[in-house]
Amino acid sequence: MKITVLKSKIHCVKVTGANLNYIGSITIDKDLMDAANIIEGEKILVVNNNNGQRLETYVIPGTRKSGEIILNGASARRVAVGDTLILITFANMSVKKAKVYKPSLVFPNDKNLLT
Image (cartoon, rainbow, N blue to C red; front, side):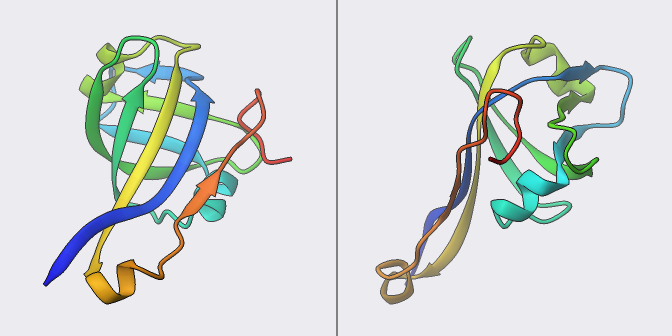
């Protein structure tokens, strides 16, 4: 049997942009992606702390050390610049592996940068 568990979380980042005229996805500073063990194209759950909305999309890498968190396409309608988000990925694994697995948890500063 396999279960779905938390793989990684980037906690309390601020939206830096919302680009409605883009094909979709979320752009995340590549430094944050690396710290959270998130890869390009990975499915991600976006939780908006300001309005309670949740959405799923996929990740594209942003410029390193930029702090950028940009919602693209239709997702841009669900956020405002400055909103606080929690970004979450999950993984499927056996119960045995899940019991010892340690997720990557990232807590950037107020400029969405690693300290």
